[in-house]
Length: 141
Image (cartoon, rainbow, N blue to C red; front, side):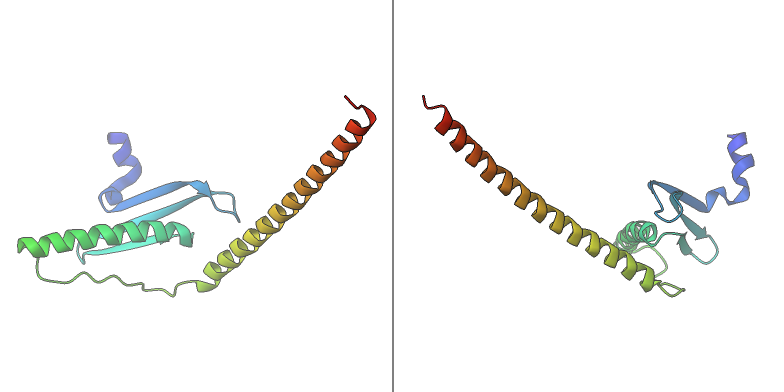
């Protein structure tokens, strides 16, 4: 525990960092996402180098906070302030659209490859039938 305190310092109680098993396509490094909690203002800050990592963590954190605030409101507790979820920076939609375009292009390539495979399999079955007919004609039983 003392070693952990020496490494994390005073921010250990207000920071949660998650590291995903997947890796960033561009850098090959593991993707991470951090949640920073401000005790004074009651704000959460989620940051990452990957938009997909942000999406997963932000969605889960929002769901849990909404459930907690709803329970507090039903129990009559809390200070009566509503939960506000906002984004202070511009969302990098160009990166997001680039990933969607890449995914769509890969799906088109997959459909084309499956079509080509289906055509080749059909050709193989036709050739096998012809070979079988020729073989039976040469060797009648």
